[in-house]
Length: 113
Ligand code: 5GP
Ligand code: ZN
Image 1: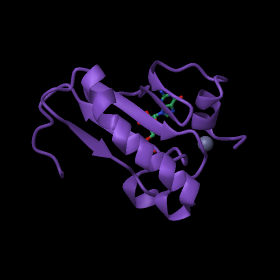
Image 2 (image 1 turned 180 degrees about the horizontal axis):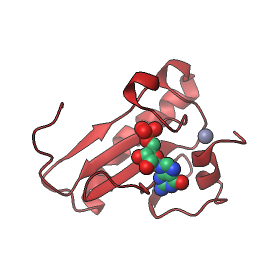
Image 3 (image 1 turned 120 degrees about the vertical axis):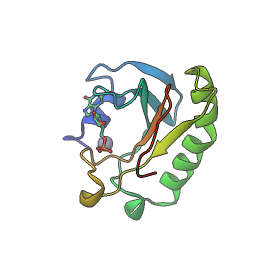
Image 4 (image 1 turned 45 degrees about the horizontal axis):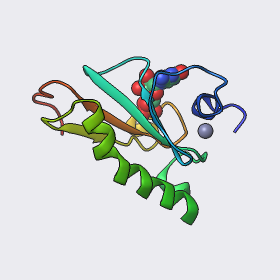
């Protein structure tokens, strides 16, 4: 997608601090971290929300979920971490390429979730 910042990161047109990459998935550090460790995991196929995902894209999301424990371990998140997937306006989704936030590296404290 021409206008998508995450597609540009996947294509290498915008630099990112990568923590994991394979043919299906990219994980990189969030530019405005909301926790000591804040990484975004993205499927290398553009779709905005789960509602728009096709079967092949669903398989990429499955691969993301399977890989996340390994990525979390490599980030040193041995005490746990939080995953967030914002979906649309009310959730505050600002980048319309599906992504999974990994947040951790600290006690996440009293929050909504
Ligand atoms: P959302 O609010 O859509 O769930 O999350 C989008 C996230 O992408 C935000 O946490 C924001 O800081 C991050 N982000 C936006 N632009 C860039 C960028 O160019 N590089 C990186 N690494 N993260 C970005
Ligand atoms: Zn995209």
